[in-house]
Image (tube, rainbow, N blue to C red; front, side, top):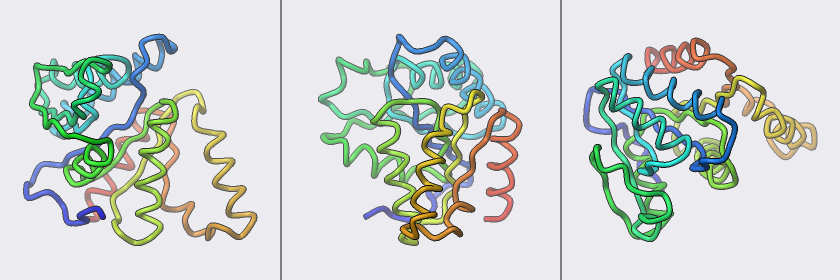
Length: 192
């Protein structure tokens, strides 16, 4: 079970979930770079999966290059696949479950960039915990090309089927620009 108390620090930490693919669209890599830079410029710490590849690697490298604080969480069995980004501090864990718990506990908010099944699984888990009132941390999906539209159609489908309350739609932000994403973050942080 996640620890819903905020980290014992005054800095704001944002966990970014995103893909580790090197072969995806260049605009997704660019998006991750811009998010990492923006986090650093705003004095927010990046918490992420620890890899040096794909969107997650670009996000972390950009945050670090812009002078930001970065914390990677890497399961030992993925060290060779996702390649630890050694320029930033890391916590090595044994399982994916541990990785997700540490990322959750270190974060004040979540930003979900384009990604595959792993990214989706991470995001859905924190949404499930939110639905169960285990936390009230903001969850913000961000894509500039409606990448997450099918996901939001599915959520609406569950609402229409009376399997999810309509009020839950207010708990998830679907943003399409850097300014919009950070406006949601800033508002959430000002309310806490």
